[in-house]
Length: 280
View (cartoon, rainbow, N blue to C red):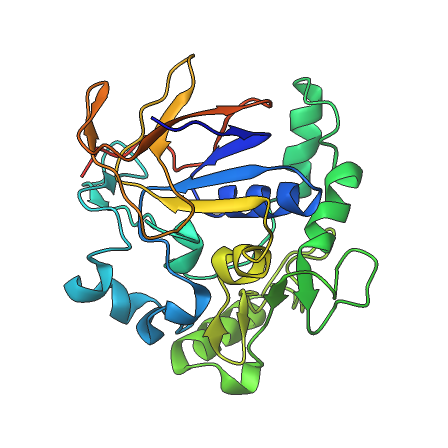
């Protein structure tokens, strides 16, 4: 069983994991990024998932087979019947399959976090990071936005809206709601076009924006896996340096021989979805 030391092991190449791995590798850390779904390169993304509207892809069993976790359901209220809860599986995570809506959380939420003791998370402290990730084509020149970040921010002009969007906007404005051209502006409220992470009508996922540019770094290794065995002791994961290698395991005993007991000098970071999906 081979072993190799890392500065950081990131579990999950999704919306946070891919960004974390790429940023740490950029700073010179030796990073191992493990992903339970397909580790596809940016150029291999199926065209059906590039559309700003993922509805057609989500309704296609062939399109969802490898990149959407099966069997997940959720409710918004206790009275609501469970409905499919679409979570991305593979490089880019849910950013590769979702609606691409790039709306910031309310800044008031961060004030509340600070009151609960989350030092360093005030609106003024987190705002530079929201701006840093953006390449906002319309408002990037403003101090609370960015124009050189990895994630493109696009807003569809009202002249190109569909009939439903146009009617909803007209009705809301007629009812007295104000127009807000930028929903992410400080204090914005009213009727707004929602921003999406898209460029020229094509989805830009975290895999595209963060991971793909970092893959050439010698200190970043991405491995596709089918199961991971983790505890307070070192992580057991598939060995090798190519993204096509896989390992299948059960209990504490991997069934394939090409495994490694990996170690990191920094705490392991788990960046997966809300709960650990069952092994496939």
